[in-house]
Length: 228
Image 1 (cartoon, rainbow, N blue to C red):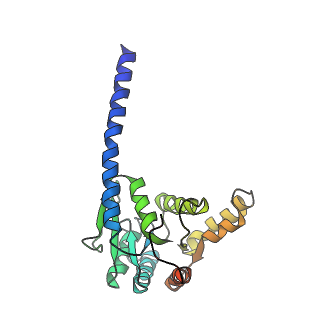
Image 2 (tube, rainbow, N blue to C red):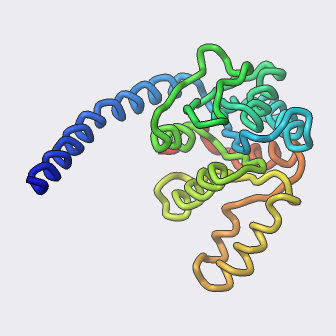
Image 3 (cartoon, rainbow, N blue to C red):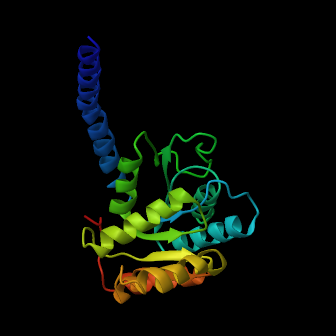
């Protein structure tokens, strides 16, 4: 009897998983349709816990303003902290301000600087990350936590393995990111777990001017289009 109950529960899970496919498909279709209309954008990542009027919040506002003034839209995760700062900078510059929102405990709520017609909601992290990668012309990575590292290393991995076209990945804040870069170089590279050329996939800067310079230099003579 216990064995029968066990397999009954297993079959119910399998059935639920099958129906979940349609919800996942719906998120992909809705995301692709909306994002394809927006135009070239750069994604800004960073901690949702960063407070207003702190060093990296203010720097993120300035970075986003410069990106928008250079003609790119700005995409963030739609929430508070660095995400709010990114959308705020785009808003202040009169640029395109996109928010890819997801419900998270204690952290996520829509910030007020997202364009009203460019706020998208997601239930699945992996669908949301596909939108970031497909429709971003570059990743600007501000100081953050586990989620920021997840998005950073997924992008590096996809480019390293030629699953997507190369685009700029820019870390902003040498005080914050310098230790990570040193560890990658002195530990991962020294152990032979990555190639020397992989270090070229990441740029480390401290100012908004450097961010725009890298973006403009990379796309000089290149087309701006979805990444896959």
